[in-house]
Amino acid sequence: MADGGSGVRPVSVLDDVAVVVVNYGSVDLLAANLPRTAGDSAARVVVVDSFSGAGERAAVTRLAAERGWTLLTPEANVGFGGGSNLGAAHALAAGARILVFLNPDAWTDPAGLESLADAARSEASALVAPRILRPDGGVYSRGLTYLHLADGTMSGRRTSPDDVPWLSGACLVVGAELWEELGGFDEDYFLYWEDVDLSWRATALGARLKVVDGAHVVHDEGGTQESRGRAKSETYYRYDIRNRMLFACKNLDPAAVRRWRRALPQAARAVALRGGRRQFVEGVGPWRGVALGVLDAMRMR
Image (cartoon, rainbow, N blue to C red; front, top):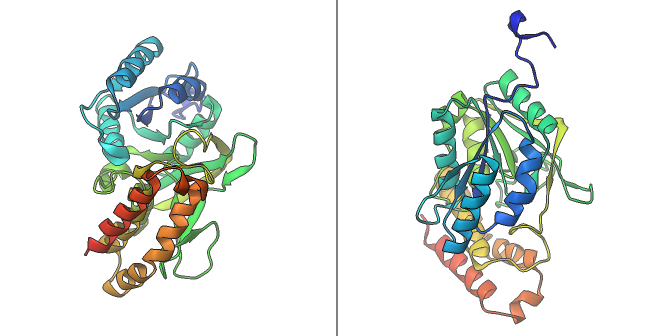
């Protein structure tokens, strides 16, 4: 690669990149994953601590000070979309031109960060994502997931011409111009489905969803709420079920909304079983989360 005098940007330079992470009770994951992602590179790290308690806030504050990260401390739990938007606004105001949104339970390395940033620089009208691996090296996601508009289910492959692709918010990279045109994540979702909605809106603007096969992120799916077969929080169930219908009401025609509403019982059951069956005999939280999600979804118009 030519040097700066040629007008070509060296790929090793990450001073226009900001890694934005929304934390909620995950300080141990931040301590393990963020240092190996950013390394000693010039990438900015912006942590948004969506308030989960005084102890967590104090621990995150100490960690950010030790590492030299920028820490934003909203007084309430602002959700994934709200936290991401706060972090992005701060990063852009500080001069970042490439935003890398990363889950606390996910990590890459500076070389992976460079590959993703280069992909976003080379195609300003693209949302960019890596392949996502499990800690054992197995494939968590090859990049694109498909939303089946017929009923709101999802899979890793296209089964109909009406299926639409989306990129996971576990690691999502976007240039400043496209981000500003999109207006960021839709904060109405609060948690889950924001990445589906952002991908949908980006595609509607003519942007491309771009997977960088040479870059990968390791996602420790047991670290937060994503592990299939392990009990999840009441919040997980509520918002995953609720936001499926929120997406439909925001983006689809009335006939599609009616189809998704008819499929709601099956969709809610599928979400509930991601945490396994044992959880439902061990506490009321999962039952309550599923019930609240279904009620929220039924009320939407």
